[in-house]
Image (tube, rainbow, N blue to C red; front, side, top):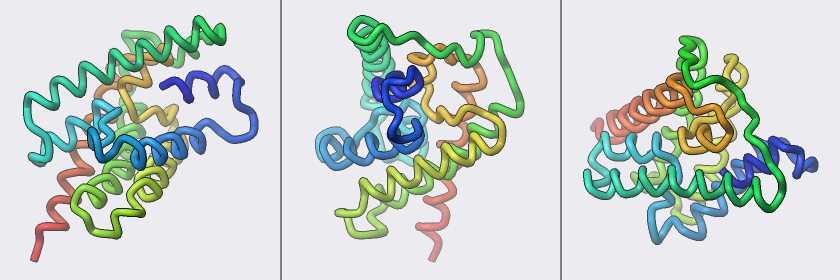
Length: 187
């Protein structure tokens, strides 16, 4: 949330927000992945839960922590850098197009995460695969007409937390994880 907030407010101009988000996620996978599984996105946590890769209790704790962390990132960004939310939508907005675009983006993103969880490639590549999957997912979402948030906690920090940016990523994550599970477990 913090890097995306700073980027959308012009604090970083050397790279697009999507690239910065992908690089940040890749670094997080390598640094905190072994500790927490790098659960920093409620949609991803729900997707992993849907295939039995996280317990009910841990899923609830992670989701609460993700939203609290995002709120704290907003407070820090606002206090330290006078960052404002970008106001990408109002709380009542329900857009079928945004839901579908975010769902397709999240499906692409979480398909890559599922490959990492199932250990289908060398573990040393997990940060790169997950980061690249995020970049592809964001690009797909933006190309289809949404903002490419793919993370309800980040949407909260950006001022875009609404039904569309909540449901789209969750639907896509559940589909992405379950599609990968279906393919990986087929013999």
